[in-house]
Length: 89
Image (cartoon, rainbow, N blue to C red; front, top):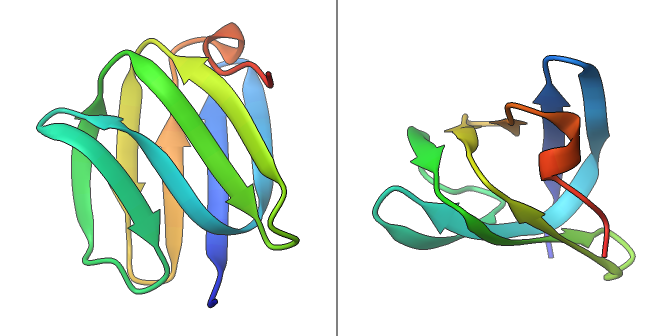
């Protein structure tokens, strides 16, 4: 599977910055799965589970309360309000 670059940031600094296979979370209109080549868009993030699949197929699970997701042609940025909103399970 192709991968892409994911950055997760809070006002306190960087939380995650690496290549991934996928990101699954809840957006404004419902659950989203972001893979390489996804159409660019921006959405707010709603409370719910977040799963990042790393390039070695290991998964990092956490819980987000809120944020902004920006999917561009070559990368994905997730902005969260507090570094503690995204916690590794």
